[in-house]
Image 1: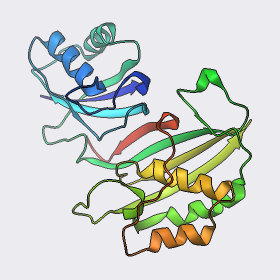
Image 2 (image 1 turned 180 degrees about the vertical axis):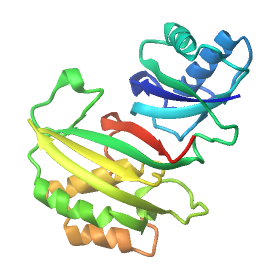
Image 3 (image 1 turned 90 degrees about the vertical axis):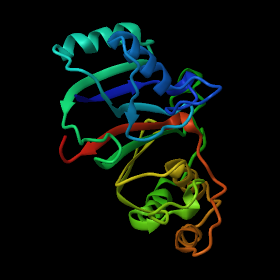
Length: 245
């Protein structure tokens, strides 16, 4: 039977979601824990990767196993064994053709930026800019990214079947007490895509890039990847959205 899990994690001490040969990953820790509790080697399939030091409130993955009769008790057992920086929030039975990655219709990410004084206590969870920025200019430039575009200059990945084309449905930007939050919702985000977009918008806010220069980067037919990539620790995967499970 197939099960879908929602997992929350602090990515500070991990090399990202995906298993890697010489570094500890979140996927590896969960797979080892599941395999131990189920007493059977168990592989999990995530909705997508998150990079080193990136966090998640709502990462999802699926796995196959024999029938689990008490999901609440099973979730409790998992969380007792998992380290304190990884928590399974929910487990549910899904159809056998469900796929945590392929079945997703959209994802929502949060990026958090401190433009006040340096905060050592939140250095692993909020990107420290501690500079005044022109938020109106950032909001104006952010509108350029909404819609369906070729984002070849805002990802480091190789070309894919979609030719770097993705659709961003909305970018919501707010500031409160010197903390700026960017919320992105789209049908898919490529490697470093949000970090490149935020890094580029930050240059606009600092007066180092114009809105027209950003438009030229988006419209360019030639690949010239942005030089501005925001740091990872301010990025959170908020949720993965599915039409049916």
